[in-house]
Length: 312
Image 1: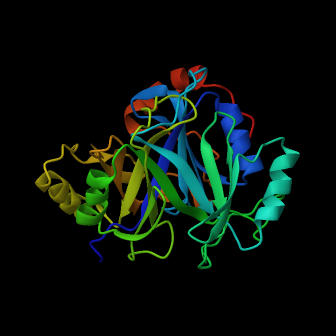
Image 2: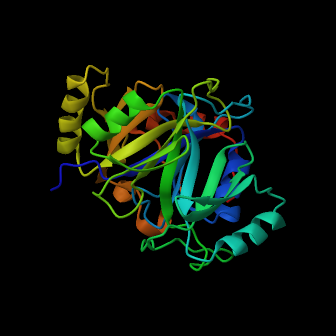
Image 3: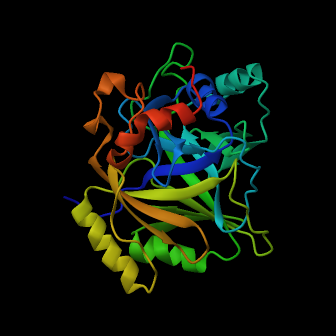
């Protein structure tokens, strides 16, 4: 089994309203809600996982929807953009679809020869749809309104905004096995050859960039993928050998995790493929039921009474 970082595992962000978040990502973007659970540290708040049919690592966007959370600000020391791969020649249809929901395109053009459009979710989180040069062969999740000819395939990349990229780049290259592929202005593209998709990290160098504020509409952390928890712990040793502080292994029910803050300020996670999202509900029921970490199961009624009621 390969002892490599296998690109992105998931990205976690913050929202301010659970129902609005659920409606946008399932009804507008057409993602599948693959898990409805709660924040491990705050069980009175949902934790939503969106992805493809089975929540394959590299497709998973998760949210902590803290009700009435204040507006955050993307800035230096944060992941500031999430890019999804979409099929060739689908951006025109996406522009029309987003316009139908009164969603404004905030930027469009090409990066490294790949056409893209950017917009924000209802909390202001920066999102991009991008047509990669190399066709993405992952099977998309389809809905009645978002068919395979336009549906998102999963992550293409994420952008980290940093005042200086050198130390963060060293984590990517020396620990995670990425390499610098190309540069456009102050944007540096790092890639891994370990996977065919979700393997791109863009570093945006902003020497005068203002620090971000982590609240609604911002990214909380970026998780990188490994095959299992044995390999996870080998990467823990690598991180420690570079003099960085990192957590012990944490059981997140659907994967095992380590967390550390890279030198540029972004919170990184390393997460495993095992055991996956079907560990506590069958594939055809993913996201249908409220699943609680075992330590909170005895408080289910109290938690259910506190959580916002959702229409799915």
